[in-house]
Image (cartoon, rainbow, N blue to C red; front, side, top):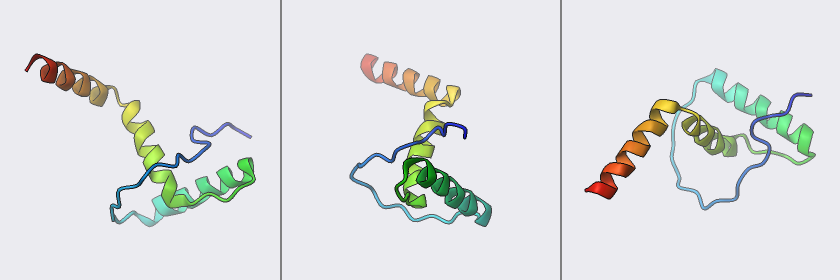
Amino acid sequence: MSKLKITTLPDNKPVKISTELPASVHRDLLAYADLIAQQSGQPADPAKLIAPMLTRFMATDRAFSKSRRQAQRSDKDG
């Protein structure tokens, strides 16, 4: 089986956000959680996948990273 990009769910104090997802995204979250459960042998809450997925997405978005670095430099110079 392929190695998943997200294998564990961090235990961080959450900030509650309510949002609506397309049914297809929800089905994919359920499927991803099932794969994690199969690989780890422990149940995985699909809702807890959202934060690490967004974190990984933002960390790998080059334009976002560049913008953040520029903003940090501006804050230091400011």
